[in-house]
Length: 214
Image (cartoon, rainbow, N blue to C red; front, top):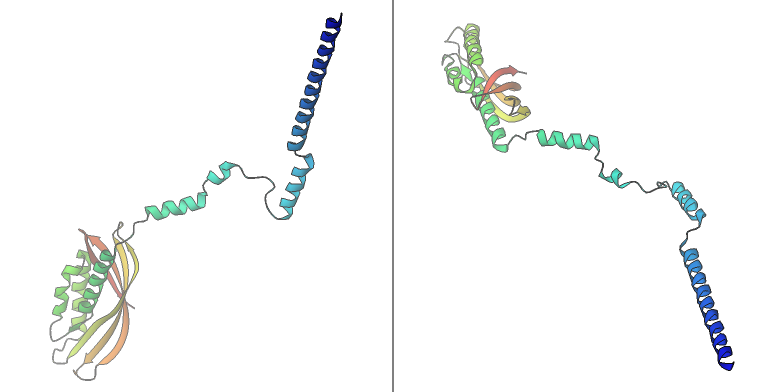
């Protein structure tokens, strides 16, 4: 009888221990969940504070950051497609322009305007035809070779207004200093004049296709 009562007593103690352990585990789980659970008012208050500060209440989706700006993308695409004219190409164009202008703007009636004959290499075929007519007009203006008349032109500066290598077109402004000799080689009239040139590319070479004194 004593052994049975001792066994019952131990069994009760074991069950008490098990129940206590279960209660302790339940309390720990409750505390854990309570500690990490965010009160519902926290999000609301946080969003309200962000709105007052002028910031978005919710974090943007990652897709917002990855989505390209269509305007910026268009500009970048335009820049990539735009062909940049090389410095060498610009120098070639400016050399052609200044060389042409100094010959085109310098002539005399006593030399029979032969300087125009040196311009063919700089000009298109249509410009060459125009120069032929222009030369005859100058001869008509100063028919008396005994009365000396001459102009000397010096290019001061050149400016590229536009230059499209792909299209083969360009516009150059040349500023010049000119001296006019009228029946004397002394005390010429000095004046400054601009000339606008239209250029086109023919067989990989820039040619003058139009010249307009300003």
